[in-house]
Length: 326
Image 1: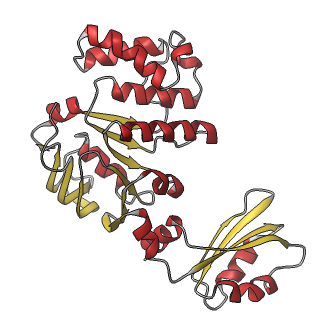
Image 2 (image 1 turned 180 degrees about the horizontal axis):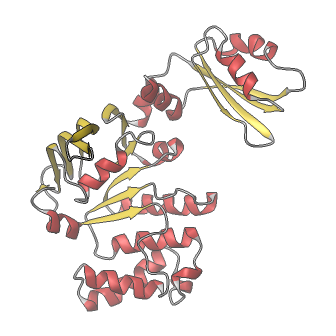
Image 3 (image 1 turned 90 degrees about the vertical axis):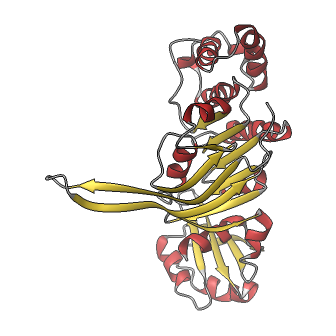
């Protein structure tokens, strides 16, 4: 099918409000999930949408995939109106949600794909050829006849991708496709995403993993509190925090008290800590760079020690944190 001349996705002034009613049916509260967002995704582009929980990512995806009606504004998919052209849009897009829902566990992968082929109206002769090819692409050929209930989470996620591709869609929505996967499974999914991009597919990806967004996406929109607060390439987004350096510490026996002490130091912009493992990782954002190290060391409590310290350039995660907190 010929691609539209315009953008694959066009969003202008998109709003969505949720109304909570009281016991008598009156409006008790109106919550704005989207407050007039604008962005476009070009044909063949791999576009990222990132933001904290409750920022509006899921609402945006549901509107663009025709699962939710917008309150205001305009959204078009492949030139089609999300309000008026629901069935034509659904026929031309593929959707992959993170998690295990959306598959039939008591039948095989082949049977799942046959069912969804019929659902999308794929000709049976085409489906017979395409299903084995898709199972080969997602690495499930050797388990194709096995019931899905015996699959690991990563295998189910690969089958989700095959399911989304069974009707050869022009546009694919990947909503946190690697969430909950082990590192190997997540790497396999990212490789599949790269392959889809190489085939010319248009992809909109949402993820909580900043390294994943930076690694895969050509452009990224950052959404916070229902608004797009930045939209640019990963490298340009990182330039927004070029005024800071990051002191990365690997520590032993560090506590939240130490983290709070670091946050109180002069010229500390932000401290991000992972204290859950035996060796902790603490990232201190500061414009002073290595000049802050003596104070960082002096704040260390008795019994704790710094195993390693490195001065690094800010990452996409550092830019993201500044954007969503501001």
